[in-house]
Length: 313
Image 1: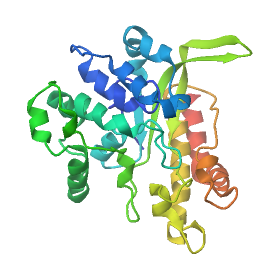
Image 2: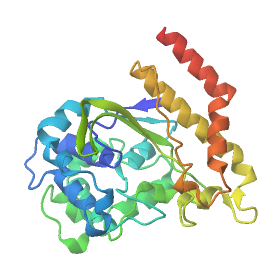
Image 3: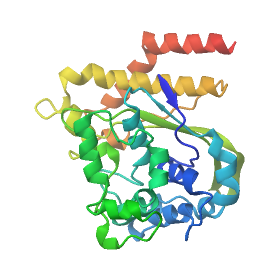
Image 4: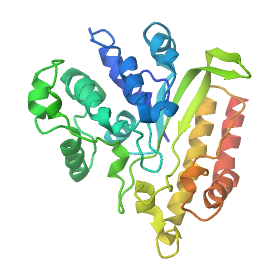
């Protein structure tokens, strides 16, 4: 298990990419707050119900960024650190059954101006200068994320890039999962301020709640990368030759959650069945939940849990 704090500030999982960008541009003069730009990205007419609230963008620069930035980190179980960084940076705001809810219209512009339009920032986020340790995947990612006139953009520093140079319909890095390869499993942690209304009363935790965002497998559309990698159309189930791998990823997710709790000296975890709800709709009934239950009860996970509990005392 590796822990790499390449994320310097974060609010929610999509903001992983935003906050990586903020870490290197917070001292630069920018025309519009990146938090506000991300908010606008989420708040298209077709995606407003999935957008984070105005107060996040309004309080980002003065409160959220300086207070909660130092708490954020990425957990992962991969030996390919460039791919972990790529997964953390290139996140989609919304993906429900492969529907981005309008976000793809502006996501490409957001990355081209904020990331590829700033070579110094790109170097900070990708110090190895690559997206993957694998030469073939690195070439594919490089060709996909850098627009066709990328050299002109990179030479211009923070200069405005003409819209015609944007790559259209940009997707997150998980698109590089296919029938033969699955991108790294990651999770993002940050202490996160919470506000919500219940019965017209505002409840809040301004000190921040410990939040770990785990990634569940997506089986809510046949186009989903996880479906392409894991699903056997003949049996309408997880492929038998990848059944253990799918189970193992559930174990790793629990191990990450336990390690995160230990790292922050927490004695309780509130779990949700990650990937066992709407995202499992194309699997047999309760299949994902059964895997989660078995993984949690497994000797490996319970042994790891007991080891960490002993270390905590």
